[in-house]
Length: 168
Image (tube, rainbow, N blue to C red; front, side, top):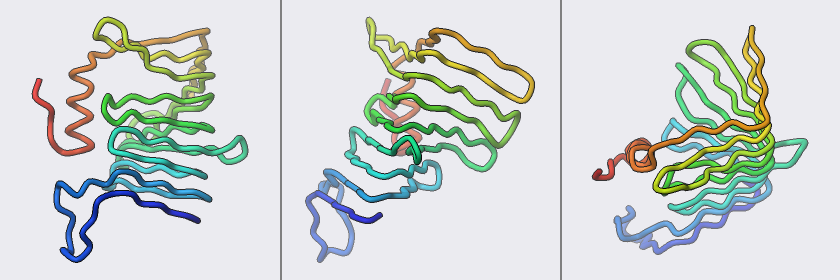
């Protein structure tokens, strides 16, 4: 990264970070390439991350991207702006494309907007103007959405990202 700012409470003389020495934020500007435990990757022009949220910026010529998965299957998202809610494990994005590669058939879904919407304890993840494509099929719609169980989704994300499942 061209510029990097780290904010937190650190005692560098101890040689290790204690659990109470929380990293408050991490900011990168002028380009970044971020890897999280070999499972997640992000790159773009600008990033601001806290334990609750991570925001990534690119532009129309060079969008930002996030990838999750391993070599047997990778899911990627590219857009000019992506925001990850790390408490609820949900994604908000401007116009972009989601791609799946690795194990199985490769496919992509482009969209005009991606947003979660909480309703009565459930979450609707909505895609505006989605277009699906794989090697032999194409489909498009004005709108697509799917409901997720917020508690189960959060517990699964908590375990995958932080290593400790939430009690249900």
